[in-house]
Length: 280
Length: 159
Image (cartoon, rainbow over all chains, first blue to last red; front, side):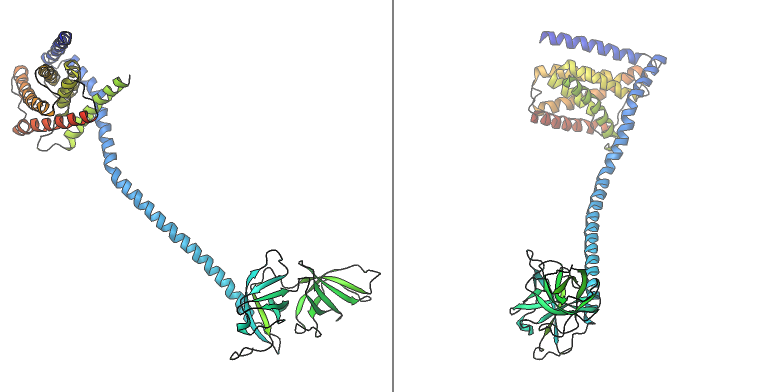
């Protein structure tokens, strides 16, 4: 304690003497120089302190504006997403509208009552075999009713109904290996039998062995077909198979006009209209 | 090293705070003399030597702004720190009440000391004004109480 007191007294004496010296000196050059030096050191503190204070004083307002901008940004982004969704919806509806307009202009074969149906489901394992549509016995659909699809402004053969439920039906596609339909080639009215191969192509068998066949010929349903109305386009000859000397007929590969994987609406040709429904 | 840096930061920060408070929060010339309060507080809690050194430095900072009496604030703050250091041997300055009362009294002493130094060196009593004389001691006492409470709340109550 004594030591601390002595040190305190000594420091007091030194600092008091120094203070009194500064006080007793007139504002002469050394004192002014000292003041100027101290001021040079300390003024930036005040200057930058004031600048910092002003910046800090504006911070709450800037933060508020930043938050408002963030909220507005979120809102605008949500609005943009809604706008994009709306544009996509409008575009899809426009395409659907256009497609439905074209389909409405199609005329069903005479003597049949058409019923339009939407494709509901495809078998992912057997893509070329069947699909399910959203009309059934409630709309008068019956077994073996032929099913057509729109293609470039006309109706083309797609398949036939093989299962009817109250609100849905199963359509067996022409490409299924169990499908077969009588058909003829446009070039020479040669009759043959169209059969599915569980693939994208059809096979037309039993063509006259002497006939001259060429690729690109159109294939239509025959008037002798038990299922389809006559003169409905099935597809075009994609390849003429080489003649087999052990067979008495020729065959060709046919590319179906209707791509089963892109069909969205189908026309089922009913044998008679539902009660109260006007036949087209 | 960290203690030294903290001391330097406190020294500079206190000067800035004194200037900032006096610039933006002084009403009718009345504002707490933060540097005086800290000088007394350091002397009461850390001993007179440290208080005198800090008070002398802060006094020079206050004197730089003066046209005359260069060294007056340095002297008065040094004496205030010494007085607080002497007082803490007689009374318990760790208590907020006694520290506030000491600060209250020393503020008046500093005002009067300034006046007399002006009388001695410039032949005119330096009068700070009634508002400063009457209000500032209360403000200083309030500030030192808050400082003591905050200091004790940190858990640092070394004598």
